[in-house]
Length: 108
Image (cartoon, one colour):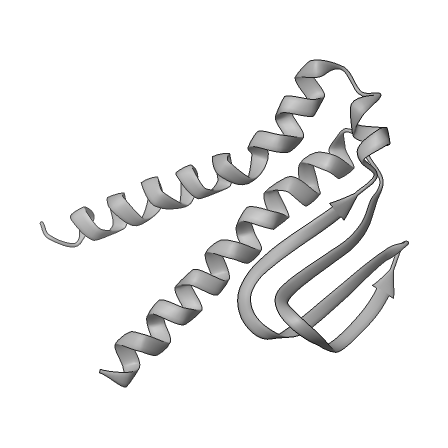
């Protein structure tokens, strides 16, 4: 039972990080400045700065976020704005398709 709970928590955390990574990479590709990337809520446990981005880990692993320059995003063409905003969802859909295929692929 504990293994299932741990797997669920790790899967949720992984999906959150990959979702936000989709936004992050799309923003970088469209040259929208990203100022902060974080995992969790509550008090900051740990953080570091690389290439102008503050990476932070918080106490409660209940969410993730990317903070970007929204005025920079608004100055981009509409296609790029949509690309950045929908990139996280696209990553989740791709992960779902991979998980679906992996699960049903093992049944044969």
